[in-house]
Length: 117
Image (cartoon, rainbow, N blue to C red; front, top):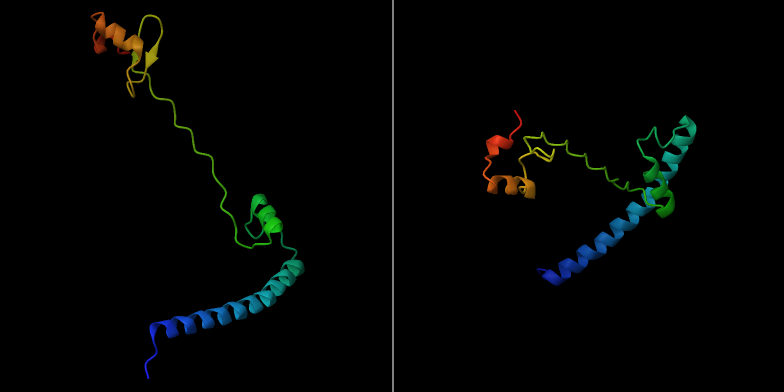
């Protein structure tokens, strides 16, 4: 007799619960063996590749899953200045044109006149 989909899903759920229980039971023994090895060899969190924040997170939550730490974004290098007016105002040529540049163009200057040589 063929089983229905519902019966198979129920059987899968029951087996998954049993598998989770066995895994949790085995994890206790694994953790104990790891702790013994750490104590025996005098290992530190740094030896195991954990950062200070990760160790704090593990102690606080009791969770062995390491959290990813954010890295600061590297600052972009300043652009090379391509245009400058007599007043010393400058522009790299990237992004929106500054007001002083637009005013100079309207007054009859060309971008080549403002370009730094």
